[in-house]
Length: 170
Image (cartoon, rainbow, N blue to C red):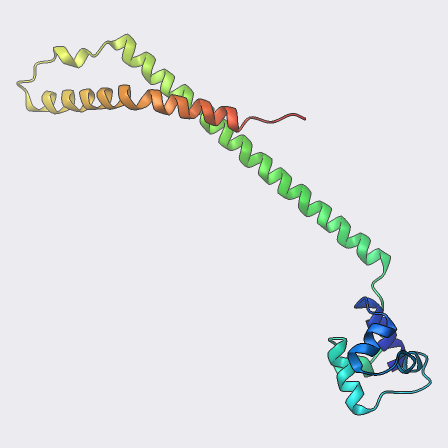
């Protein structure tokens, strides 16, 4: 078991016998003898071996360590593909939501502009001697004044947002 575990873990770590031997300050033939079951490391070398392989001594001495199978890699690859697909779908859904939000903003701005244009500020002809009418007239006038100044900027921003969030082909 020990010999097979040393060999399996060394290969899994991507080390050659020579590289492992250099880490342990032994010759390559010593590592080869351990892996072929011709000798075993003493307790000090076993501890150094576990440190070099970044593996607990109990794992080195325990059951056989299995190499990762190609099926495991295939399963991991398939899971990663599914995750990538889900992330791409989420990103596309977010892009569509942002795109349609900009379109909706532009439509709302254009509708409010049309309503204000058609109505022609009727509150200017109201009788402002009544306090309630005066407050409402000032509120309408403030909204229109602010809207006329901010709407063009918002419309330009919405147009830029629509352009930037469109689906790119190719």
